[in-house]
Image (cartoon, rainbow, N blue to C red; front, side, top):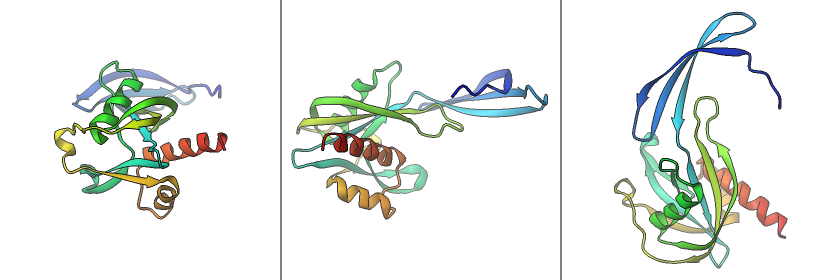
Length: 184
C-alpha cells in the first residue's frame, strides 16, 4: 500500500449541493513537474446493500425503474445513508421499506467503493437472515417496484448473461458466495 501522494491541493471548493450528492472541485499541483490539474469529486454519504436470505435459500431482489438508464433493473435492496446514520440502521430500514421484511439477524459482510475515480460513495453490504414478512413502505419514486425471490445460482446466471448489471448486486453476491463457501 504505502503509495505516496504525488500532488498537493492548491484550493478546494464545493461547486454543487444536491439532495443525493454534492460536487467538490479541487485544483491540484503535481510535485515532480509543477503541472496543474483539476479533480472533480462527487461527495456521497454512502449506503447499505442487503442480501436478504429466505428460508428456502432464495435471495430477495427488487426490480425497479432506474432513471439514468431509462429502464428497469434487477438489484439487491439498498438505500442511501441519512446524515451520520449507522449503515446497519440503514440496512434494516431499507429492507423493510423495499421488501416489507424484517430480519432476526443482520451481519456486515464488507463494503465497496462504487466509483473511486471520482466518487466518495461507499456501500456497506449486509446479510439479513431469519426474515419475517410484513408490509413495505415504498418511497414515491419506488412505486411499481417488484420483489423477486431467486436462488443464488439463478442470480449468478443472470449476472453472467448480462441480465443483472448493477455493480452493488454483483459485489453483494460475491460477498455472499464467499461466506456460503466458508460454511460449506
